[in-house]
Image (cartoon, rainbow, N blue to C red; front, top):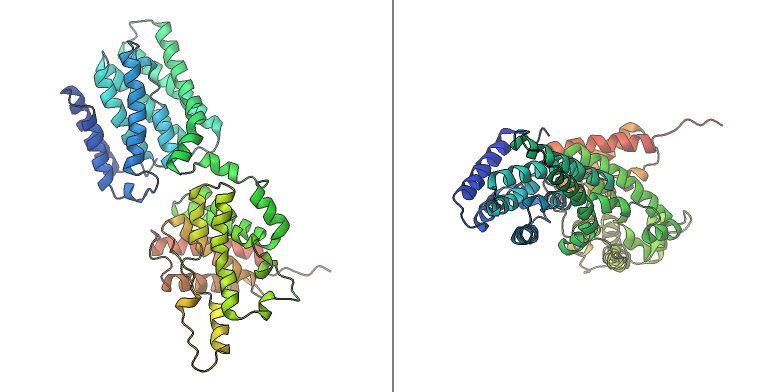
Length: 435
């Protein structure tokens, strides 16, 4: 709530609230309020960073909600039957952003209220219900929270009606319609949520929790075929979730992305150090060039597996970005040491194809992946050595430009380093020998 209620956002909200009220008073075209709001969103710096909340998606949701409301009103039914809470609930779940949901609710409520017989009453009830639903659904990870939000939004619609009528009219039928309207809005929003996730190619907290089920076929394969990679992915998930929470990013998305980021190693698990027999390294019999091709190929194989198992495109980014265009340093160094005269060894030939991570979540998974692997390789992992290794790895990634495309600040990176050091020290520190 602190982030929501700062002066800048209140000023923006107040300005566009006045614009929409003015639009309704003078009965201008219903599309104009939506145009004004989307124009604002297009220039609002944070909106541009919300990958799934582009203008096309907003227009799509607006047209659906407005069409439903318009049809209800044209059929001669009261505006009490319009399930206005569905749109803010869907917007919060799909875009994970309160501002976008709020302004989409404004864009829908104003033109529908202008078409109702009692415009101000309709607008007040619509906005009261929408605002309530937005605040209650924000950050929801359980379906019950969405249903509860719809029910409370219905109660608030009822109270708004009673308030506007000054307690002078007792109309149990209208009261019942508003209560059922709110409850059904939550239930319907949950029912159609998977459809909108598919259409908009996004993922919500609710579906992410379903992907966290360790009985998922891909994770089950990792347990059996690549147990080292599976264990590594769980630790990377814990690191990423905690670090994201520390810098205000989506920790759940990062955790689930980390669970699946290395699924490409299922293609040839024995060629990755965490799955290898201590006595035998498969790369000892291969040239550095062949080894780096096998290592790099796990990105391509991971994307193919993600498509095969119908994983959300939101998770593809973690597979694609978790190495950026980093250098496969070990095999690059081996190639330099073993090169013959006149042989040309370029650094570019030993770099991952990229692209670099472009969100906080994917960047944090990249860092967590690197520091976990590096810390695990320490022979005598004392807290000081772990701290030194974490800072060295993160600093190298920063200098190498792997964080250039994301929004992480130096202050964020310092917080992330602190989180990694604390967690990894607890996992890998040296222990007392008891026997």
